[in-house]
Image (cartoon, rainbow, N blue to C red; front, side, top):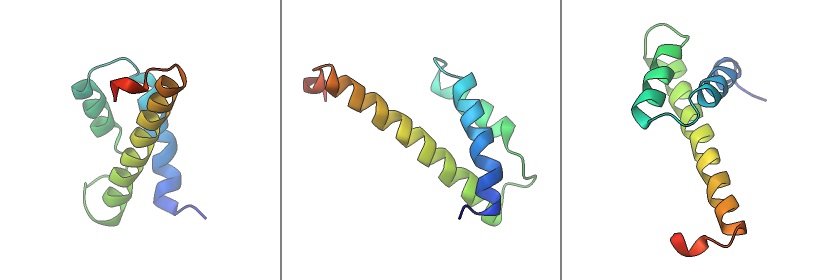
Length: 77
């Protein structure tokens, strides 16, 4: 069962990641900061927000790595 805070954060983060595809790291981080929905950046909601960003961005990086490996480009790693 997803936590209350994660159920709110996950779709917002997913949307920002999709909307900022191809942009610089700085632009992506800025968009994620601006999208934060819980008011003060403190305590449990903020920890969940940061964890969900890490989860979603890490999954995206892993998928990209797997795609490159499947294309025979694993020697780049």
